[in-house]
Image 1: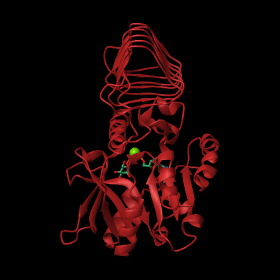
Image 2: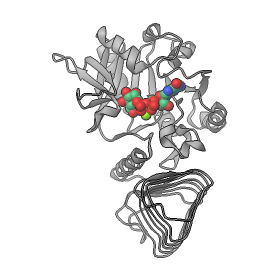
Image 3: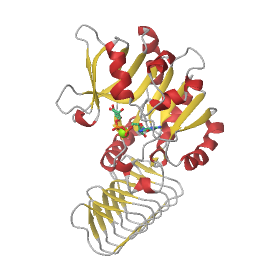
Image 4: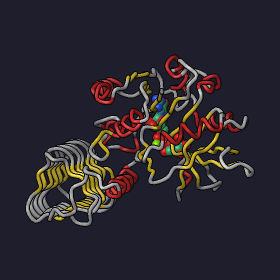
Length: 364
Ligand code: GDD
Ligand code: MG
């Protein structure tokens, strides 16, 4: 089987992290976001994976080549000279996606869930039309693509509205599709949107169906959602009794859902959790309190710091008695001084913060 992952876009909403790494390589649950998808695709027998890239392809190529062997897949980089949107990249990869009559998967790279690929193939084959998109329910549908069904049909889509201004429904496009190669005829090689052009045309012809996702789902393309998605992901691992989590019996674990890389060091009398991810080589000092946060590789949290709802970027340092909260995001190599308070601070790489940040702001 074949798949294309849309990994373009500048990831601006995930700044300052994406100033250092392209969004798909930012670690989610201690692994590059895109690896969750590559692993799930390999597990259902996908052999050919196209990565549609338009931004800093050299970093992506270097990072992902090693996974080809690990997961037994061929990864091809399809590099756009200008951003081709969400449909143009499919046309650009026509040679691979259209090499036989079998359907292919298309994935947005920033979507985290229990990927239901086996059931999706089965359902898609059962209706025999051109495309199936995975849908999920959300409370705030306006930032997504919304689907509405035909009244007389359980799965055939009647309308697809991208980022609706007025409420049309709460079932949204989860950013995972399976499509027949025939849809490539609908797409021209130019910047074009699958949501705004291809899907509405397929809907008109009665060729697009929906498949309901079970379990958690999150587009983790912005810090607030990255943190919420981390909580959902850790909760799903807890339900599965996953070995990736630190046992709740550890004295410092509070409330579970804690993932700690084995190379990290934890000081005395810490209270960690719930919903914390600690990356490789992270150093946690004595008496540190962590909750609902992600600490990326090589960062250091000094004694008695208090970190909540925060992403601490690679190699950053949080000072003694510092207090971080309310979706603060530190880029690579940031230093937060001792006793400094950060409320929703978004701090660009290599900055040193010596004074309190009392209200949400970007520090550059
Ligand atoms: N190769 C390539 N080229 N990829 C692109 C380009 C491009 O020009 N533009 C965007 N992408 C990729 C992004 O990297 C991402 O993986 C995917 O296409 C979707 O773009 P986003 O910018 O993340 O879109 P969104 O989150 O606002 O909306 C999309 O996702 C929602 C679900 O999370 C839409 O598909 C919505 O309909 C959907 O509900
Ligand atoms: Mg997105």
